[in-house]
Image (cartoon, rainbow, N blue to C red):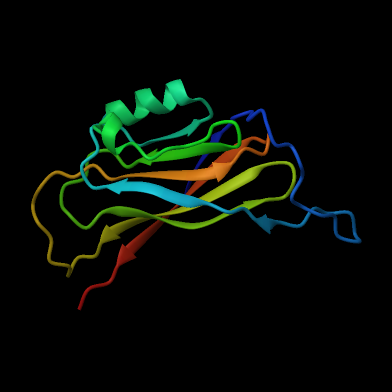
Length: 157
């Protein structure tokens, strides 16, 4: 499992969502999220990467590099929300994509869990270069954000 730590001190809502267990250890609670966009043909730079976006100007830049136009850019209120964008880089065939498994917080950090899905050996695929991407909106909690990638292979008959 590939794990990439991204620190975004998101100024704004700082209310903790986690509660302490009787033993003193923090428990995790779900964080609401919205998938803003997915794509199999992102124009974002070649290497796999994750971005935590806390300002509109950076969102506009990343969206433009991704290949989106202002007309199809999903709106985000950066006074209350932020965006996690993940890019898989170039892949050799169709059948690659992201899904959001969950977003949680323990009150000290936010964890975004993504499944990086790839086609299995028996899957029918198109031999075309793809570059999957996903944009996910989460609330600003004033905590560091960690993006965790889990490789998942699709089993085809």
